[in-house]
Length: 157
Image (cartoon, rainbow, N blue to C red):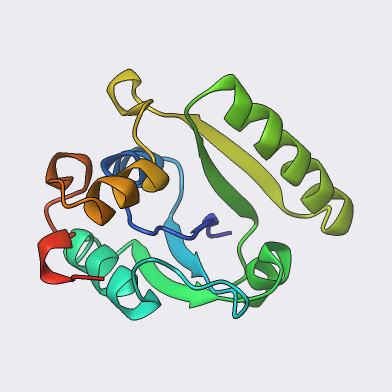
């Protein structure tokens, strides 16, 4: 049976921490679906189409990675994609507490789906999309915090 994982997130924008988690998880899973969540009630800082394009740039040469978007419950999307795993990266103890609660609720709703957590590399611990957005919003250069394929300077919000 093919091991398929969904890596859900807003990825607003996709960071070097996200990339690291996916690349390291490729040794565990046959396929990873990077799924940008879409919420019609929230306006992302970067448009969904731009986020998907950037992630596609990062993994253009990786056939085991699929990039898409979804709305609704992650477990429903996993069933739709025949994925048995939800992949999440953990930076801090606070991340663990938050992700543990979500994983337990997901397990209650869909007992056949396992959540798998990978710790970020220590050097990626302080990096998150919120900080990167704040740097960009205030005219700073955040390029060191995103993969090469994420061209923040191409988009001016």
